[in-house]
Amino acid sequence: MTDSPPSPTAPIGSRNEVFTAYLDHYRATVITTVEQMSEADQRRSRLVSGWTPVELLKHLRFVELRWIAWGFEGRDVGYPWGDRRDDRWHVDPSESVTELVAVLLAQGEHTREVVLATDLATVGRPSERWEGAEPPTLERVLFHLLQEYARHAGHLDIVAELAAAETTA
Image: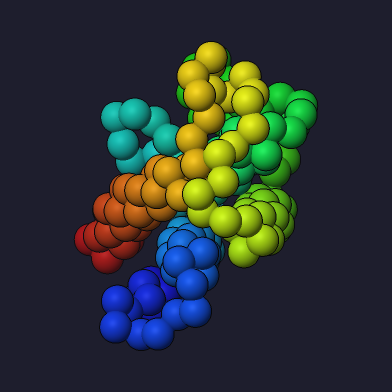
């Protein structure tokens, strides 16, 4: 596990920087947790839902793509659901953890650049992402993104504990 999230009492320059610090923390936590697992454990599901740790890595990259690039920025991103096949998360066996981590980090860097350059009250651009609803502000998008990362980091924590317990049993 990585270091704790930013302390609420530690000075951080702006609310934008608070959001990026927490996103960076949770992204790093997920990456470190997956990288510390054996290759077999990275690609094995221990849950009824069937997702694997590598599928979670890919999913989180697409979550950021959907919420920031496609949603907030209103950009054409090709196929924003590239983490899915047959209505579930999917990673091709040829996709390596190294590749998935690199793509997630690059997406995270794009998110960081957008967040640090944009007022949090800025309303996103209209796009298909919002399914006809009014686009939210960047701040609302970031709250959603943070809760998604925190929730999935917790899920992954449980999966890593199950894998470790099985290894030591």
